[in-house]
Image (cartoon, rainbow, N blue to C red; front, side, top):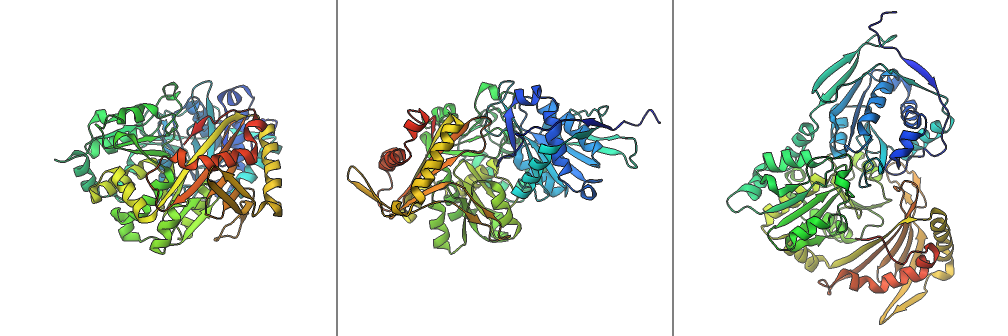
Length: 564
């Protein structure tokens, strides 16, 4: 045998029962990946084995991550296993770092068979934090349930994995690296690519960069404050907002990706991005934004820290969609929101006579509609907004969309929102997160709650709080039939809908690692009272939500961990 050829080995292994991917892939504590023998290898082999061998041979796969701890270790294993499983080319972000939106972009640009994204999104990083692996398919979007189910089934019976342990990649050097493997006719190729450029070029073709540059660095420019939260989007902010669009370098903070996100929780909300909110309060900045660990989520703030809820954000973008040149060329095919997201977008869709889709939580449902040419803009209440340019939510895209609206309308964020509410009325919306709840207690509570609300006697029940009376009009466990492929997704959240259109929704989060997060969403519409405090307006419904569920008693929790 030629000593220059790298050896491919088949290693025996034993399955683990807990490798079912959630809506955002497989997420566990770093320690699980480090301490359980072949835990990482098993899951990666299950991904490759889920792809037909004929499709896998000679194919292109994209890999990148948010830079969190264990990222580089995982990439080396993935490359070694990809080579051994017949993949012909790997495209990897420089230093192993690439944002989730950029990976979606690169998968589509290079017609890859898919991509492996190493992220636990907005979960904490570092040796004691979380790590995650997500598989995106050839459309650039998260794998559908049929694919993730197949991966899970393979992981439960896996007996061996293939690996090329002598293959070592240099992630620090841009360019092509080739490796000769035994029993392979063609060399295995690894391309280390600029993580930003393909994605930046896509944005240049969507937005009017000249108008944005004038807004951010022209004679009458606005002042902005952007917090990358030491996540992957830092280099994208530096290159696109600062270098290309002319923002002062000091307007972007925490732009160096760190393995532990600087010890912070990289979650762009009022709780975890409190430093940004505080820096906005004195009014020196006109616009603020924050991003999560892998760059797909965003939070929008106006002067003095004026908070734009994610449901309002997507509704305002929808109402001003032709401020974005891309949509002037493509037209608008449809709008969509996840079921827990407030109905603010529905009102824009109705007024503009554009189709509105209500889907379960999870971007894969939007991707299916986009692939069928039915959807242009969508959003989730969990700080995710995006268009059909890729198949992932996209934090920086959302920020540029908002800046495009500011450039066109020449108003403040707050004035744009108030005008929107005057035109459409306001959907008051909040979400209560109860983190780290005992999983058995949470599941039992949800089971009992479902039994109660689906009983026919629950409909028409009246609940009174102070001078407010709410009558139940409908209650169910949300079920979605995909209009494209007729697939049915059941058990997507418990809904109580009142006669005035107000809604209470309960869900167990699928993105926690080993414990449950109980989420309560409250949505209520007001036509006249549009400038009130959200928590005051929603207090009666919050009282009803807690009374019906008995959440505090059932979980032992006295209050939510996070309110958004």
